[in-house]
Structures are given as structure tokens and as C-alpha cells.
Image 1 (cartoon, rainbow, N blue to C red):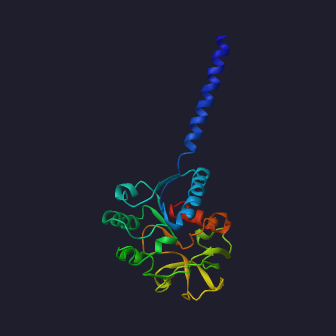
Image 2: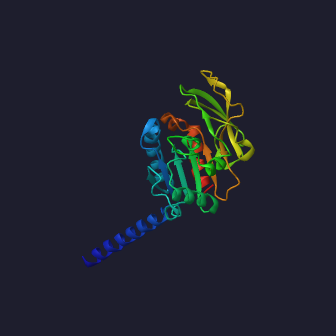
Image 3: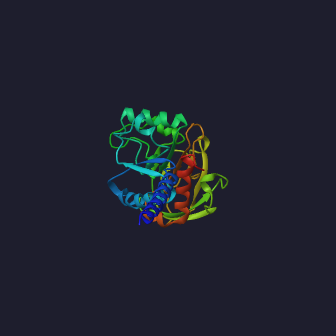
Length: 257
């Protein structure tokens, strides 16, 4: 009887050791901080993005935390994360402390950034002045207009060799988007990874800017960064090309690609 109990204890000990080893192996690869909008007409996109991000984090063994405003952003917070995802959140209403902390984060080379859609809503909105540094960060652009009734459009990849574009088709259709236009193309100041072909808009629109980058990275900063314009419709998370692009961007910005 004593031998049987000893044997059972030995087996349980091995099981617990293996479980502990498995937990160590599943240790978080990196930490991601997500800034999201909790209201307005982009709320549906946020509601679709969060479960997708949560599943990606579980499947890929990283940690994701969420904040819905910039009040808590400071150096101490940002240094805890390897990637900062600005999910449909504009570049205004930030405090002086949060702006300076983000600027230092992007110059440090110790973290990465993925910005979506609303991150280029650059101008004087809601009584806030334009954030000049952020405009320069995005290639020196200013928001001018958008297609309020939406249009589909074909996105063409310009740098297929970039890690962000791994397994992304050379072109893909975005079925519903607002397609912001800016006072000028950011191309002279950034590395363009993809652009939209405005001749493919359906329905056609007079709101066009010609050379129209929609995915780019600014190589003038030590920290990896990528801006992805598309980010309005929740249906984007049913688009494999888009989700592959976003997944790649997160891992690349976190230094894992």
C-alpha cells in the first residue's frame, strides 16, 4: 500500500513538473499596449478588433493590455511594452506628458508602434491644435478630406519584400473604406509599403489625391513603426489579407519578425 501511494505521489510530482515547464515555455513573448476609442462611429471596429487581438495574443503567446484614453500614458507605462498599438485613436487630446513620452518612446528604439486609420486625423479638431511632431512622424501630412459615403478600392503592395507583407497578396480589395486624403503625399518622407489605386474606387468619387499611400513606415526613427490607413469597417477582420497584414505589423513592430 505504501509503495502504491509513493508511486502515485511520484507520478503526480512528474505531472506538476511538466505542467510547470509548459507554463514557463508559454511565457509571454512580448507585451502589447492598445489605445482604442470607446465611442463614436469607430466603436464597431474596436468591438471587432478586441476579440481578434485577444485570440492572436493567446495563440501567439503574448500579453495585450488596453487603455481607452491617453491620460495614463507616460514614460513609466510605455517602457513596460514592446509594441504600442494606436487603434483608431486620433493624435489630439493628448496631454503634454503623454506626447513627450510617446515621442521619447519612438526615438528610443526600445519599442514599436502600429497606428491605424484615425491616427492620421491631423489638423485642428475639437479645439485642439495640430500636433506638429506627429504630423512630421506621419510624413509631414495634414488631413484634408475623406469619402463619407465610403467606397471599395484595390490596394497594391509596393514592397513585397518587407516582413510586414509576408503572405499578403500583391493586391487585394478593401470593400468599404473612407479613404482619407491629405494635403500632400507622405511619400518623400516615408517608406511606402502599399497604396490604393483611386481608379478602382466603387462607386467612383471626386475626392482623390493622386499618389495615395495607405501603408508606410518612417525609417527616420529608431523605433520600428508602421501606419495602416484601413481601419474603419469591422468587416476588415473577416479579410485574410488585412488580418495577415495587421498580424505581421504587430510582430514586426515588436521586434519578432
